[in-house]
Length: 468
Ligand code: AMP
Image 1 (spheres, protein in one colour):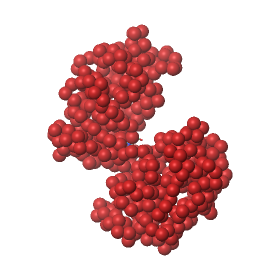
Image 2 (cartoon, rainbow, N blue to C red):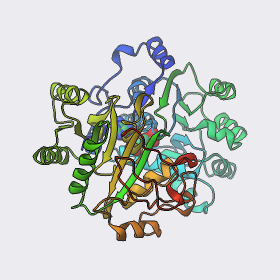
Image 3 (cartoon, rainbow, N blue to C red):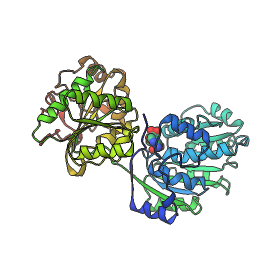
Image 4 (tube, rainbow, N blue to C red):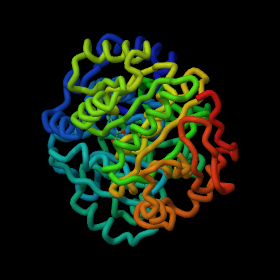
């Protein structure tokens, strides 16, 4: 599978900034075009990242050039790689023993969870780079953190409070920091870390490269950025919004074997519906996409596949036929579906659940475009329960279960609902999205919403399904 980058909309301000920064013409569209060290290209190939996300495309060249950066971007835009890759590149190109108790890179995050996530990303992207990293955060004993810092590290990911504690106790020294990253500054300030951040910044050497990321750029944040950054380049990225309100979501618990007949049932219903609309079916692999498209054709559906192994011309042709309704079913991998902006997609089927929960949001966003409503149906088999849990966490709602088909695996649904492996935390189940819907009905043609009161969608709205 070739993974596409998280999709974002670069706003016009950012385009203007890119032009101002003189990078418009050199914004790379492939990772190969980026002058990153070989171990990083290798890991990107292994991760199957094919295309830099907008923030990566814009920020990486600037950072490799040694610029300070003011990034307006949030999680899900690929911002971690946008700073981790150039930092790892520098660590690889200039290997040096860090000073005792010091760190060559300091990443400050507002929470322990984000610190863990960022450190994990460094470990992933730096898999083939020799570097040492550690984390410092509160809520756990400090001794292991002190010993990890003793010999110095290349990357330290820390939260402000505990870091200052250890600095006060002289277990950490910031005088050797070459790269300083402040991540999620807006949250940092919301959590009252402004004074701590200022204290930490005062301990950094003047000669350093500083990166500053925030989801919003309120005046107080810009003011702080100005006091920390030196002649920064500005990059602004707006993430695609989370699951649109008008997209109705369903999950079907099924065995792997039942996925194909269930898809055929759905497509048959879709064809019978009053106003048949286009369908995108997501497959995790290129091979799977090909196989599925073929078998659908054999079963009498007009289907085609698009994925990274197809040439640009083939993809465009397939898209054109899809758009015109000549092949109303398009089987796609995540990367191929990137940028597919077809207005009349009424149904998105997640034949395989994505292992990156953000991809779910992007996938279902292929429907419900241009003010139309849309339906997303996700197939979840035994081994995908954890993916579903992750998805429900990021969309902050439970996806209603659709049982009105011949392939419902009640055992699996029950295991998930009872909080077995993969079940979302209770808080999420009872959250904004309402409770789990065990309703039946026909997913593509005016089905009953639910057999219980749990059939309400987000904001308590009962899922409506008119016009399909
Ligand atoms: P972040 O915004 O850094 O939290 O990244 C969001 C998600 O996108 C992470 O799961 C990354 O693994 C993934 N990701 C980052 N960059 C790319 C890329 N260029 N292509 C595909 N996936 C990516």
